[in-house]
Length: 164
Image 1 (cartoon, rainbow, N blue to C red):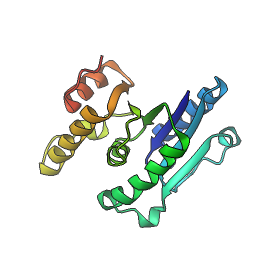
Image 2: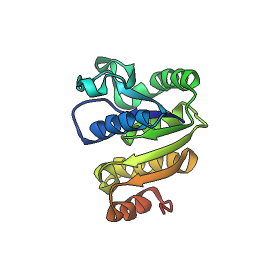
Image 3: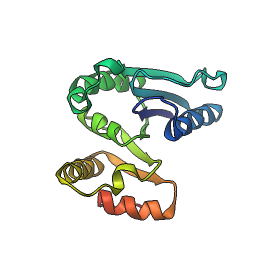
Image 4: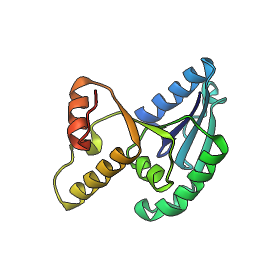
């Protein structure tokens, strides 16, 4: 299976380490894996990750959250067309926006590593972001993976989907 893991960046953190560890493990099982980071930040020089293929979409100095989506989505589309993944895994919520803009028909799995945005429901901006997340979830996300049962319940409510 060909798996494309999409993440905001490879800064030191939990989701980033999990994505890299999953990539190493999946490659050992015979899968072809590539990690695509929206930003060119990579703080994982360890030898154990050397064989994990990585692509970077945008220089962090050029990143302007929502304004970076159209140009970045075009680059992502090119990577998807070249790699031809069977599945795309999202490891940070904002990359779902990027994948939706890239208009991919590839099956997407959203791996939720923490509560983060899914517990922010106050204010107009939070409600707008929740609305967009729900649109994306209903359009391209085929599966959610959460780290716990309580998080599954919160995520199902936030995205307004059945996360079984």
